[in-house]
Amino acid sequence: MNLLSKHSIIYYILIICITICSCSNKGTTQDPNIIYLKWNKSYPKDALERNKSGLKWALSFLGSTIALDTTLTGITHNNDIIKLDVSNSGFTKKAIPHLQELNRIIQNSEEYQKRGHIDMGRYVALTIGSSNHYYKIVDTPLHLYDLEASYTFDTLTAFINNSGISHIDREIQYSINNKPNRLAFISAERDTVTGEIQEYETVELMPNGHSRFALYDIEGNLKTVGDKIVTRAGKPAKCMWCHESNIQPLFSKQLDVVGYIPSNDFLDSLKRYNNALKKYQREVWRDSVFLNRRLHTEMEIAYIKFMEPSIEQLANEWQLSQEDVLKKVAHLKSHRHHEFDFLGDLYHRIAIDSLAPFKVLEVPESIREASSNENKVDYIK
Image (cartoon, rainbow, N blue to C red; front, side):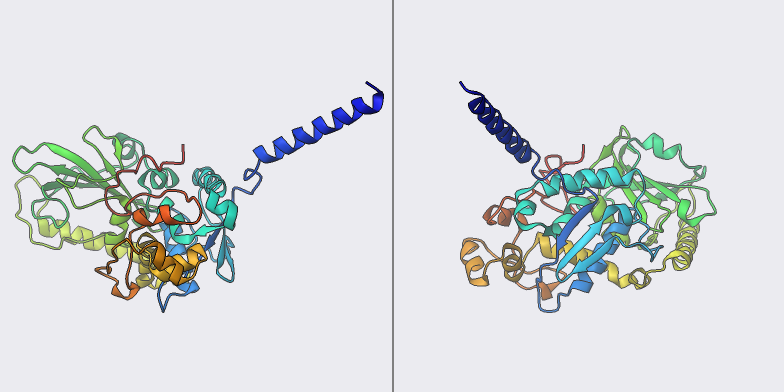
C-alpha cells in the first residue's frame, strides 16, 4: 500500500469519526438557559400578551422574582415565539440547575428538534403541573421535619371540623413571625373518629410574595398529590388555583374545641396575616401583570387550553389545516370546559399527543389531580 492510500484511509477514518461525534452531540450544544416556547392561538380572543402574562404568573409561582424586578429581561418574543432565559428570570441558584436540566430534556425531544420550540402550555405543564418538578424548582423541604425546623410555630393550634377542602378534621399550626413573607402553615389531616393523622398539607410564603405548597405522608415524606379519600387538595397546582396569591380564610362556621384556638380568633389571625401579605405584595411587586390579581387566571387558561386543546390550538401546534386535524380526531369525543366555555369544543391531551406528527415529551395526565404517570414524567433527577 502506497503512502497516498494510507493517507486517504486515515482521512476517511477521521471524517467518519467527526461525523459520528457530531451526530452523538445533536441537541446537546444548545444553551440550557434558553428555551423557545410557542404561543398557539386556541380561541377567538386568545392573544400573545395574555399568554405572556400567564407565563409570568407561572414563573412567579415557581419562585421567580420577576414580579419584583422589572429590569429582568428573561422573557422576550418574536411574533408568536417566546424566548425564555431562565438565567435572567429571577430564579434562585438552586432552581436554575433544575430548570437547565429540564430545558436539556425538552431540547432533545423530537418536537423541539423538528420545530425549534414547544407549546408554552407544555412548558407550564412540565413545571407547575408536575409535582416532582415543582418541588425541586421551588426547593421544597424533602421531609416535614426539615420544614418544621425552619420556623418557630405557635404552641396553640386551630382545629377545623368543617373544612371546605378536607373530608376529615384538620389541626393547623402556624409560625410566629412578624414578616409576611416568612409565614408557614402546617395542616395535619386527622381522622374524625380515630384522631389518627392521615397526611399533611403545608403552605409557606416565599420571598417573592407567593406561596409554596406541599403535601407529606404520615411519615413526613413528600407526596405528589393528596389522597382523595382524605382531601380535595389535589396537587400543588390545584392549591395555586384555589389560594391564588392569598392566605385563604375559613369559609364555613366551625365548632370550637377545648384546648384549641377559638375559631373566631383563628379567623381574625388569618385575616390579619392576609392583609399583611397583600400590603407586602403591593410594596414589592412592580410588574403591573401582578398588581392586577385577576390576571393569575391567564396561567390557568394557558395550561387548560393545552391540556384540553381545541381544533384551532391543534392546527397551530401541529402546523396542519383545521380540516386535517378534524380528520385525525374524528374518533374522539369532544367536550366543553365547565369553567371556561369560551374555549369551545375541546379534547383531552392524553388522547391527543399520540396523534401528533412528531413525538412529544409526555406531560402529567392532569395538572391539578392525581396522574397515573406522575413519576414516569419526572425528568429532573
